[in-house]
Length: 251
Image 1 (tube, rainbow, N blue to C red):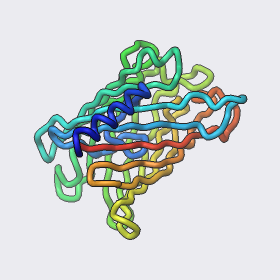
Image 2 (cartoon, one colour):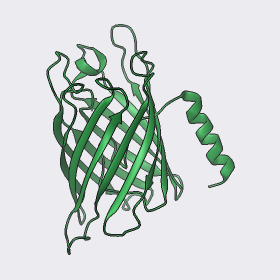
Image 3 (tube, rainbow, N blue to C red):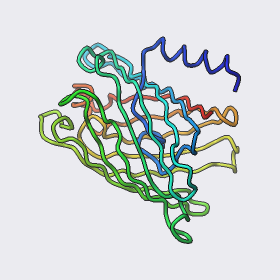
Image 4 (cartoon, rainbow, N blue to C red):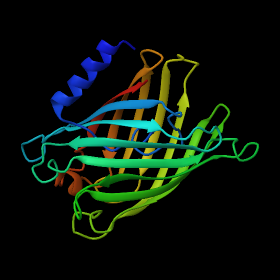
């Protein structure tokens, strides 16, 4: 990619003052994929509410961040990232930095036909009792011919800040996903469904697809059905969900 193009994209993201803490993901949850050693991934995401809540649509969540691989091994890999996150909220926006790290083993690395196995931490913020979600997780994934890749895992986070709308602790849950390249339609098309459990503000079911516009640039389009609209949007309307567009650039 030309340097001028990269500068233009970064300038565009900075102009929105936006980001979100994301390791290599499916649509929302972490995946068992890794950035290669010395390689970097830039992501720009936004989440747009599809319906007004009490007469107002609310602020769009904007997300941008950089993730890079740091281990020079094929069978044991690692990546880490730093991100900036804003949603037009005067309480959370002054503390925008979130961090993530992930270690693990790709498919077939431990023994023949073994699943991928990863462990990590994401959404580690800098403000105590506000953004330090500190979500530790483990995932396994296996690619099945024709069907695609199935991933399953579990997360456990900070019980002080991961709460439901009544203030009860909701700091853990399942991580599930299916994803598959679709060469029957186009080599550029990828489809996925993923789910994060919990009645906190991170619990969601997503349906989406990605289109690769070039070797290093792709865009995800997905619908987000949040588990608990009351805690996320302070809404009684069960149809207040969102749509996300995520630009992914590898370089």
